[in-house]
Length: 188
Image (cartoon, rainbow, N blue to C red; front, side, top):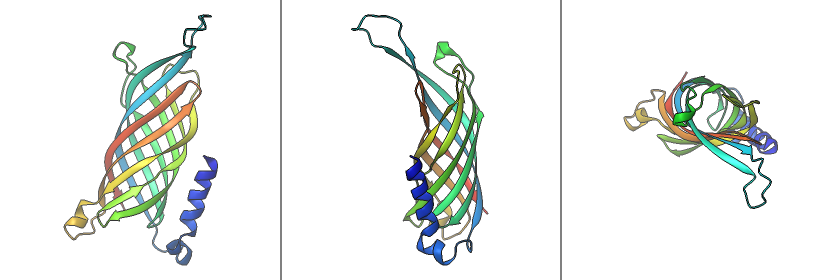
């Protein structure tokens, strides 16, 4: 995954527009998303019977409010930092668990699907803290995001966009965190 991330960064920085004008049309953006998470945990069974599965899978739901700060290096590549605020409490009876901390850093290659629709592929590294787990989930993180610019349909360049996507926040030996997001983004 580290090679893929490095390749994405190198391709983004060496694209034609970036090569000709590396920092000419740069801009910053901020975003806020609501994220519905699926948290899967695995625990070893102590039963010595070979017919019994050795791992037990537990599935939980959670949610966070994700804040994003990004830098558009050029129109096809950005760098982004994400931070998550807890939006759910741990309640094992209702299969919910709190994700108390989340931070990630991403390279975000972007492609235009239409004048008003963009495809983003965030590739990066994230650290996620899940209540009840002894260690943070620190691993590669990747996903897909669609960004809709409604003002473009009206002939305007107003920089507010709607976004929706899916991200693997992390996977470690005993925990996997993934989720869908829906939010807003404003470019400056």
